[in-house]
Image (cartoon, rainbow, N blue to C red; front, top):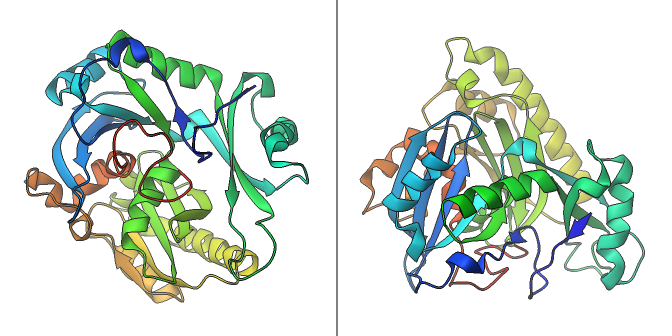
Length: 336
């Protein structure tokens, strides 16, 4: 098993050094790609000193998974990847994110101890895993450090395959991220001070619920309902399943993190549909449609003002919310 850590001690992304293609002067901003079930989305986002994150350009290539090098190469040329800091997001089936009790060991031994605890929890051999670990913060008003951690375990083959794809295209890959953290980055921009926030998004791989507070990820859950299902003529049959999963998740969250009050649930489905109204009628908290126009400057890519386009580029936009250049671990939220 492999353990990866960045220089700052921050976690939840893999820092990938591919210096062979990293000598060119880099422009400001990040180019992030997300490999969906039906295509690859890519965006370039810069973070001005003041104002909203600005999307400089965006492109999408329809392609069945796994996408070919030709698809990535075309996107790279179009968005000037050679002059960008680049990140990519793993697909849902390429890793596991697990929450577990923190082993009672010194900090420097935490990753090793967690790795052995994961041995019976993974659906692939531990020897084939690349692992990262990060704290789930405890009560900031309490005296004890958080007693839980998240562990990310990706197949070595998935990480190597993504690195190899970028290598073939001669694109320098700096960071490999996961969807939960991309979504967390967007949630951080939407937080109400002193309150937690829940975000629920859907794509071709299913639904993803994240709950964050003060820029930290506290809970993540996958929901087995896809975006095409929600846009189908019989979409209403899935509403009960989504609602039940949310109620269970919120009940669990309230028991484990009683010190966090959630302000609202933000829903990203890409289009106006009945799920929003159904959830608003059946959940105890406010439910709002997530409009990325609130937190991004889309003046240079007007097409992203539309809800369906925001859904298509959602994970890529979140993954591109990184500050500065090649400083590992420095993203919009904490702990990334």
